Length: 62
Image (cartoon, rainbow, N blue to C red; front, side, top):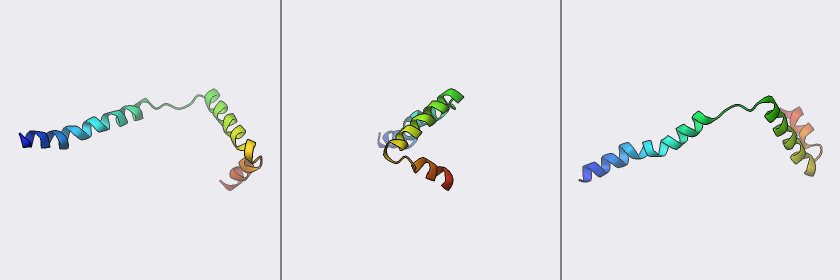
């Protein structure tokens, strides 16, 4: 009986934990151009609220 529990913990446990991770990785998709533009605009708005020049510094740095 102990062997069955050990096999379950070692073999089946990681499969049960890994299945949601694999599922999430398989469901990822790239953003469309419209979605990417909207995301970029919101990021610019977010950084411009506190530090208007931060985005320019980040663009120059990298």
